[in-house]
Image (cartoon, rainbow over all chains, first blue to last red):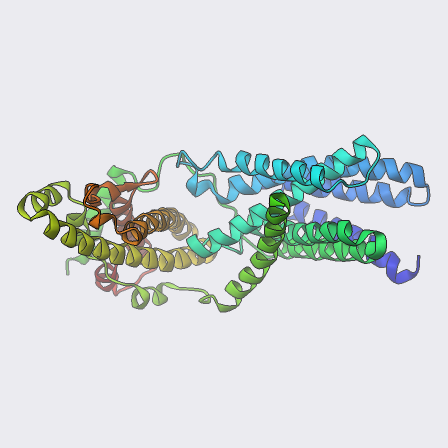
Length: 247
Length: 195
C-alpha cells in the first residue's frame, strides 16, 4: 500500500478522533449522547482495525463485529436526530409512528432486495451484517430526504447540529448505496474504486460533522409538553399588545 | 422489478436532496432580521377567513341560494380560502426565517420568544400544506359540481391534521408581536397590519 492509499484508507481515523475531541470539548454528549457514543465507538473500532490490519483473519472478525455494533448505534443516532428535529410535531398523534414505520420500510426493502439480488456472501453472520448495514443506509437516506423536505416546506434550521448529523450520514449513505448497487452490477471490476469513493465520502461526512459541532450554537432547553402560548398567556400578551398600540 | 425501482428511487432521492439543499443554502435569504420582516409579509384578513369557515354562514348560504348558485359560490369561497391559506403559509415562512435567526443570535428572552414563534409558525405551515392539498384536490376533481354528492363544506377545514388553523395563526401573530417588541421595533402597527 503506497502512502496516498494509506492516507486515504486511514485518514478518516484522525478526523474521527478530532470530532470526538470537539464533542467532548463542547460537551455535546449532553445533547446527542448516541452520536457521541457512535463517534467514540468509531474511534475505538478504527484503532482496533488499524492495529490488526496485517493479520487477515483477526482483521476480518474485528471488522465484521465493529460493523454490526456500528449499525446498531447508527439506528439509535437516527432516532436521536428524529426526536431532536421533530419535537415541534411531537404533539401531533400521527407523527411519532413515522420513525418506526421508516425503520420497518427500510428493513422490508433491504430484505426484498437481498432476496432478489444476493450479496454473494457465504457466511450467514456476514450476510446479516451487510443486510443490516444496507438497511441502515436506506434509513439514513430516507431521513436525509425527509429533513431536506422539511427545510423546504417548514423552514427547518439547516444550521442546527441535528441536521448536520443527518446531512453527513445522508451524503455518505447515498454514495454507499450507489456504489453497492454498482458493485452488484459490475462485480469486482471497480472494487477498489467503489471502496475509495465510499471512504472519501465518509471523510467528507466527518468533516461536515466537525464543521457543525465546531461553530458555536445555542443548546435549546427542553420544551414543555404544552403548546406555546397557553390561553391565559395569550390573554395577558394581547392585553400588553393593546396597551402598546395606544399612543 | 418493483424493489429495484424503489431502491434506485431512494438513491436518486439521496442525490437530489444533496443538490436541493446546496441550492437552498445558496439562494436562501441571508440572516433575516426584524427589519426584514414587515415588508415581506402579505396581509391576511382573519375576520374574512373566519367567516369562510363559519358553519352558520355556510348553512344560511345553503338555504338561501339555489343548489346551482350555492355550488358556484362555494367554488369561489374555496378559491378565496386557498388565497388566504397561501398568504398564511408565506407569512409563517418569513417568520420562521426570522425566528431561526433570533433563536441563534438573540439574548435569552428573545431566544425563548423566537422558539415559541418557530413552533407556532411550523404549525401554521403544516396546517397550510395539508389544507392546500385538500382544497386543491376539491378543485381538481371539481367536487363542488358533482350533483350526486353534497358540496364540500369549508368549515371542515377549521381543524386539519389536529391543528386549528386560524387559532394557530392568531397565536402566531401574538408571538410575532411579542418578539417584535422585544427587538425594540417601532413600526409595530405595520407588522400587525401586514400579518
